[in-house]
Length: 229
Image 1 (tube, rainbow, N blue to C red):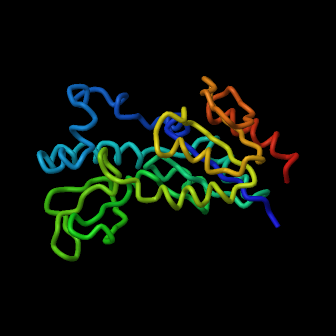
Image 2 (cartoon, rainbow, N blue to C red):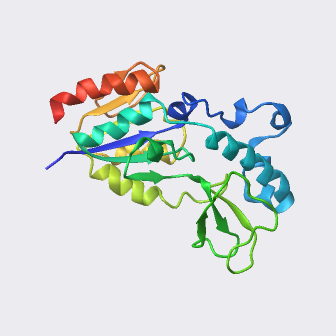
Image 3 (spheres, one colour):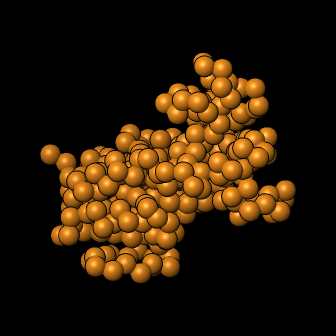
């Protein structure tokens, strides 16, 4: 029976594929605070602006491919029962071949109803427009967890973390909660690996740091995990 490897991934792994974060997007968006395009208040105030922002991000994703970090994580399924918990809204893990991916903050390629959050649709292209509606006739919005909204998948993520035999962190500084708290849902005795050039402070856990960016770091992680198969 394969050991359970749980991986928490963040923006660092997607940036290596060229996906820009909000603060990297520049141009028009330099004049906006993130809450002006990524909050329920922004949606009520100016839904056209919000849709435009996410259309630009989605268009980027349509032109982006997984990198060595994503591919290396997918390949670990040959050795382990791998579950990925990601803070990222892209689907690069799935494109690389990972079969179990939980998205904490939503998914860029999906839209959902504004009257029924259970009505979620996969978009056929990068553009979501005013007038695009669900089957109940309600405007569709990005399927994203905005600032001020509940991270509804965090309980499921905590349950996954509790089952880990090995836990690895890739591409996140562990500064964003509640995701950063998942480390403390793991069993006390399991090995923990953190891939991060800056080596964030982690209290109360025995951690092996791999001080590299995600792509190189995952390659080194695979070598270390050969001893745990």
